[in-house]
Image 1: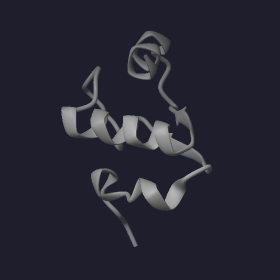
Image 2 (image 1 turned 60 degrees about the horizontal axis):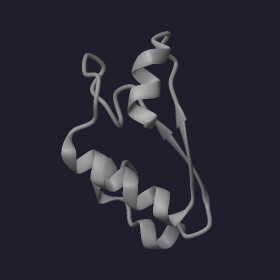
Image 3 (image 1 turned 60 degrees about the vertical axis):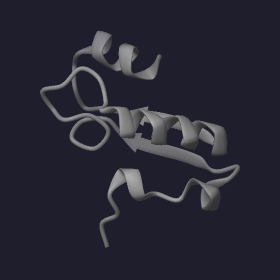
Image 4 (image 1 turned 180 degrees about the vertical axis):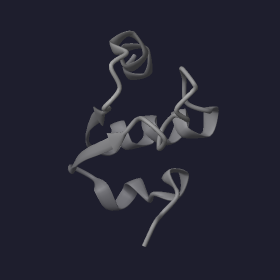
Length: 68
């Protein structure tokens, strides 16, 4: 079952460690920043638990700007 990122219910993840794939999930592969809806959902997840970003991309600047 695949759940769109924006549809994740963060209230069910309180206190959890949350791993979010950046490439193709949080951010489209060619983009530098998430869309506004994805940014809002990421902030809600941060409030719910510890969020870790995962990327197999080699552009560390891109990942750092997303994490900020």
